[in-house]
Length: 495
Image (tube, rainbow, N blue to C red; front, side, top):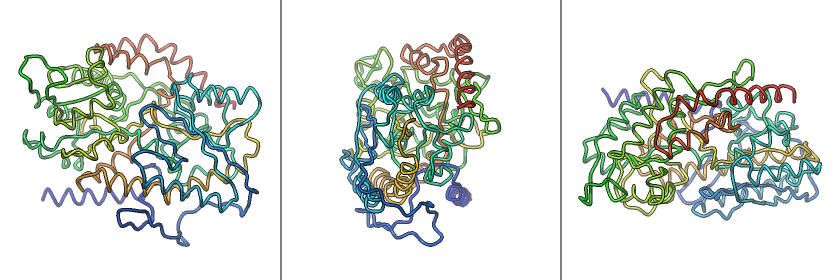
């Protein structure tokens, strides 16, 4: 009976996911595959397609910009990305078809450097704005750069761009809901690139350690809507082994959880909690960081992450010099030194050649009363797409960008989701419903992107120091957060 219920629930969930264009999960697309290369069929008469004019642009050089960070060095417009050969082939095919259809030449440029709000992307947008020009037709900016550039007026409202229709399924409908302040959309994401997918957070678990501890219900808990913080904490605290016998728990031992700073924001995302939320009725942003539930959640997260008997916090002041969050932590996981590890999908290629058996889970709900799972896209590592304020030809930019996004939904998303993620990185069919849940329920926190009150930096410092000061931080910076929020609402309402 339990299996029958799980199957029925899975069928219902998948049906809802496939029919809901309001979420930007990776879409398999109308493709047939032999597991090695994408073979995409022609659009049918009833398939969703963009309504674009039949135009040619006389070999115009369409310049794209991609901001690369240290962890995710991925260029959504280049076919020279390490670890993603199938996706690279799809990028080449997408770009070539756009070039042939519209008679343009796509020139892929990239920058690397500081991804935070004062970094190279924001500075590039500022210089172009000050000069009254636009060096790039389409910009893939760090989310911090995109938000800072929008706040300072360096970008164009995407809703005003001819032929760019953000209501189409190849644009992220959750971004429309979460980031449309004052009815304006200055940046977004979607099928046009996969950096947001690579920066999506998840939890991996060791099946070997789970079997040893007789933990056999993780997938059932997820499907039954019962994967909660109570369950997660309980299982984490079943694993603590001093492997080298020196009576000191360190990077040489085994834990229930391997974690890092960003797991705090991801845990909040899993419970659908945010620093700030945009009211869908008014388009105004409001503070939502502090309440009884988030205060309790912060206490639970920090108590678990800071408990060095059961958890190794790789970004803490005590451990950061020994184990780096990106590489070292996943290395420990590969050696079966953690039951769970908090991570992002970008890290999965690092496990391709490992023999360990692992599974993929969403972040847990706060409790069973929470209707839907939540999710988090790492602001530090993902890109948002924007158009500069002084773009010389918005109609041309709209046509090219819309076609780039549409063809990406047909070629690039299937190449990543079906053939790379499912075909190479998922090792158990039971992970697939978890992938659907993770990508369908992730969201964006404008409070993080616009650095309201400096909360994100303060909470990161709190995590490094391993001292819970959540309530003090919320209260100490509330005035500053409210002031900037009011400024944002007023500026975007008038723009």
